Image 1: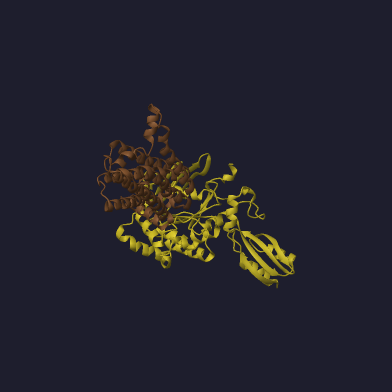
Image 2: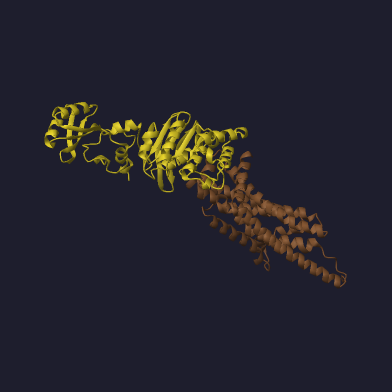
Length: 337
Length: 258
């Protein structure tokens, strides 16, 4: 549905996006993850036809955005970072205007406005001036605007930026509801967002794709072993020694201790679920097991690993012996500059 | 065409949703009213004096020559010069500031459709001003007996004069996010194009002829007399087309770096 090949964008001498290639399948939700200024917005602006690429090809629904911009734009809905609304207009006036310039047939405009207002929950403010609406409503009006012509492709630039937690959850649910009917590309620098809304993630940093995959895949790729956190009450040294002897355990490290209560970080070999064995070991030795949980490397850690400069030394955790095979599509940009 | 009208309608609505349309109309009506009154009063006094002196063989005074023509050529061209920047300054600057330019440029519209839509929207508000002018002049027809034929040329002239200014003003609006700057630049340039003609008052030769020809107000003189001269029409239409062309170039550049 979206094909990006060798996209490079320069603003004068500065390189905003460098040789980025990826495809998005029909109905897929792709997340762009990266720090501010990584090139997410620029990439999206090229896909929507707002900016011409310096090099490379971008096709939306089979139409090249440079050669057949009108056809590509007809099939694209775009919500920029700040919703492009006219504060003087009412919601209905605004949606009617957008419907007209997006080429919705005159007869269908009214029903389309009704449908998208319903979907984006702006029906109750339909006749209010947009300038007087709260940020959350304005964002939803922006989303309604992007949906008004029922586009095949939706490009959402930080759709939850500036919303309160409740609105963020609502917006995410809305986006998840749209998946399947539309092909969605969304960008964010907020990590949980990606794992909650996207099927596939592109991590982008300094204009390059640093990693890609499903949120789960990314977690697995970066983690060569499983980590379990165990809290128990008992003699620390003895417990540590006992846990070490559980099959599959590589290393045990005390994390923090208060009186008799000790928390250990247990590293096990990849693919081994050692939780049951650990529990038995503690209980059989008559110590009190208080807590036992796996601790996956969070997306935050991955993100930091991928986007900070001293990647090789394992920026996410000092306890990591080495960074496992990242299966990177490209070397981190950090090594370039 | 549908797209052009959609944009034009949006622009016109924006003028009337904001104070701009009312401000422009009020200022115009006030200035026009003041000058209309003073011209009429002078006319009345003069004609009393003429009558008292028994005419002295002079041709009778005529409303077209003593009120309408000086009002249009001497006063309104300058008033319009002042007000057009208020109309054009927001056209692109506002969209750039609020980010709505992204909506327009990512919609299936050509740049020209957007530009023409904006131009037509501004032109529609300007036409309201022109209509107001002839509301005042209509009063002369109730109480006097002016010649109606020159009005056609005067309407055409005012519209063409406005079209040229609006197109240039729109171009200045693409330069910046700041409406004030767009307005001030437009005003300064218009003023320059207006006074250009003065410096050549005593000059002779090619250069002064060329400079005088470029003066925007100069070409209005024939229209004010009631004469539609093709060269004046061509001048205003060329300036308007130039303004639209330059706007298109500027929008293109905008996309390149933005």
